[in-house]
Amino acid sequence: MKIKVGINGLGRIGRSILRIALNHPDMEVVVINDINPDVNNIAYLLKYDSIYGRMSQEINVDGDSLIIDGNAIKVFCEKNIDQVEWYKEGVEYVIDSSGISKNIDLARNLQDSGVKSCIVTNSPKEDKVDCYIIPTVNHDDFDPKKHFIVSSSICDANAFVPVADILDRNFGIEHGFLTTLHPWLNYQNLLDGPSISYATPGEIYDYYSLGRSSVGSLIPKTTSAIDASCKVLKQLEGKFQSMSYRVPTMVVASGDLTVKLNKDFSVEDIKSVFEDAEKNQKWKVIHNNKEPLVSTDFIKNDYSAVVDHRWIMKNGDNYLKMVLWYDNEWAYSARVVDVVEILAEKHNSYF
Image (cartoon, rainbow, N blue to C red; front, side, top):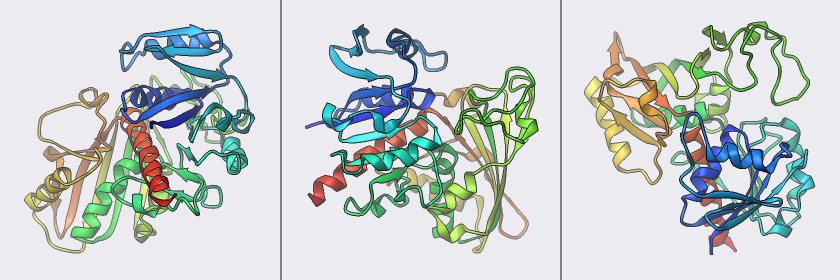
């Protein structure tokens, strides 16, 4: 039987998750909930995408349902995640991709409803969720008897954590810096204005520079990448500092990683370790690139982190520089789908 999935919030991540899940042989999306009340508009946004192109499946609307290749997906328009009777509609796993902080708290109300797990597509504080899962690194940590709300972390951590884990296990990490170059997000401004929160609607950030024109500036900002990463790799706490730039592109992020390692190494040692990692992984997490590519070449690449061999460098005494690429929407969404599969396998083995 297929894994029955519901998606709460059909923005950039929600739509990417749906597209990927539709092509998963063991998964079926049966319910969508979104604050957009226009089902025809939802169908339109799924069918045509400015980044990923036209949807391969046939999509139509029948009342309050989407019909995709003949299969019905019921669409709700509720503000809060717990206002939808997910289990009544056959949903086993709810993915909250709304980005709204309040929905994480309300998701706890689903725990006794029959839904097996709720996956949230961000990295809240540890008192909000039961565990954090990043495939290949700590997927065995999930315990269906103890964990209901599961964080699939954030795109930056899904790229950085597997790389840092490989480096730490093979060479030991003393300390490092991470700078991410991240495409604009939809809560940013086309023209200068106040910086508006997406996670807490109606709230204005006091982060003034983030309110500047997203299409005309490189905007330096803080990032939660290391905080989210240390929730999975606790041994890195206190070893890294990070910052980010919001850059005027639509998709594909890059990570500029500088690390001091405990063991001596050569550039070839680093390349070899990551080539071995790609060969021996269950999920599409690590990929190696040796071609002179640019960010647009990684659009719809579904690996969590593409290690660019052109920019693996050593400087002085055990200092390493690496550049990572990742499609911050598509690759991340692919890992969310993997997390659903991981949870389902664990549930099936326990019960």
